Length: 565
Image (tube, rainbow, N blue to C red; front, side, top):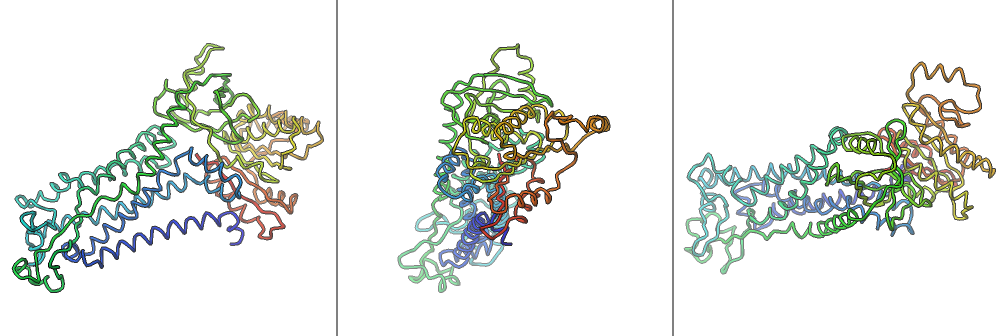
């Protein structure tokens, strides 16, 4: 338990605070509508469904305030820079922005479902009351009209065709029509966000996610219909306790004037206007960056259908492990895709390695392969750079870098930067040990990255710092011909797959053994564990960090960090 607090203490605290606010808002507004005297007559028509509709609405307002903030990338980068003087634990929370975005979305979906179901019941009960199906008081309240000195309570005004009243009401009122639009937009957004859709049909996910514009527009106007109405004060006052059984005498005796009702003013816009302005500024900044010129320095096709783009942009400054969003108008004017930069800050260009992983990447690779040698590629827009967990790699005395497949890209930037720092004898380098693990399914995937490792290997040996970098390459998939080739050349000084002195290992790492070794070699260090890879591996490493961390501040502690886009 104590070990988990080291890695998840602040995250858990934030989640508890967020959930506590949701629970407080739900209970506060539930009892406000369930016990408030001004809603006595409204409750008589609707029962507890009134409170069950309004309480989720309050929670929805709060979460709709939050939903856009985690995807304001420039805001997060600004905050990350502001927190550089603070502890690494605070900065780690910013790296979990997508997870928090999803969590808020789940709460919005749940509260929307409760809100919709409750209001469907409300419409049914409003309709039945209007038709005189219920008691005398319900009929009297439903018959109040906007005439003379009266104001209505029941928004159902049409009784000509009882079978069509609920449908007519839903599709002809502001609240009903916007509610339908909001709900449909939310259903499309959520269903297209499933992992299988994002991985296989990213364009579907991308375009349907932009229905949030319709969602927020509908949300702002949803309350303008003022469907939920409360009793207004009158002179003399209408005493509910005394007058509820005297509906025939309303307006005839001084003690019971005709009750007056009014709908509450729309309030959702007050919750969402701030985040909407922030997001609008975010998109404006993206458009400005879209218009800035980007030049190709080099275009290289690497093995395993990996495209390397070396780009130059005026005023562009990066840090290790950061990522950019790329847009190629020749493929799509609207789609932006994230890619981690593989270049070092010390270089006069920035580079990305793009693996074939969908329609957009396939089209881009196809365009680049057809270009005549030495020519510039199609127009490319760049948004960024944006910070990630890997930025903090040099803030730790010891770092464990774990990459899976193309997930090695942020660590290419880090290792290149290390090479430059050693080359320039940078005295600010705090890190004294790096453990690097790369897991790949096929031998060709190692080829483009092995050159960098060979340079680093040679540089460390020349400077007598061979122990600074420990790297282990794991081949998780191979055939019989590969196995036979390895057997024949096993005694050679260099690895048959990579050409490095460090031999490639076959199979997956035994993480307990690796963490135990790191802890043994660094008994008093703070170790940052960084992953760019699948969620399943993240779960394993997260648990190992908690398992092998010691609560004693004088002993080894592991902090888990994961790349999130």
